Length: 219
Image: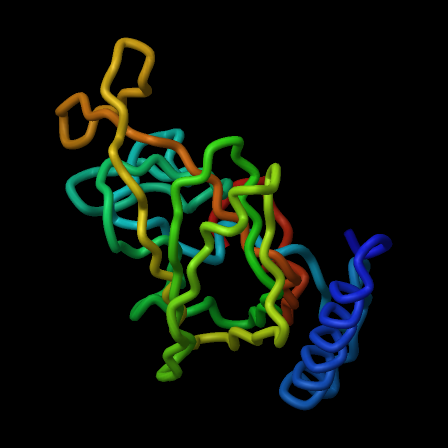
């Protein structure tokens, strides 16, 4: 995508410069070490699902990597796939800290969203970063494309310990047939629809240890 889309290249370069400037100022004297930070440097990786929490209405081992237990989630999200059991307006992705904040020592540069599904179920989104609310965006135009993505004209920085909420409208109905997926939700077999919602961009971390450990583990 970076090689083929000049607009994406411009937005990515703008975001990278803004995020590096912010990290240099707030994490000084550390400097940018990119994917292989040395001592005295901070690093960069992709946006990890474990920085966020799933929608409370998505469940199961196949639902955003979480295990539901009466409103709580025993594991951090290990991937972006969610299993939706309800239609209509709902939270899609939120920060995983208290108050739905991004974890300490992480800053996220957010470029857009990808929807790598053959069938698309999200028709609208809106989001909030800290106290700033952004307007509704209809996504149905993207259904003419295969595995679509949306790239914002202006990128966003989600700062450490800042609240983040992504809301969306999940279009129904949720199919109920012998071939439809079922998950046990609070001990009740419930029909669901799967949807991947992938955050595009980069995540900078202040301490290398925060990015080490087993894949899919908590941060």
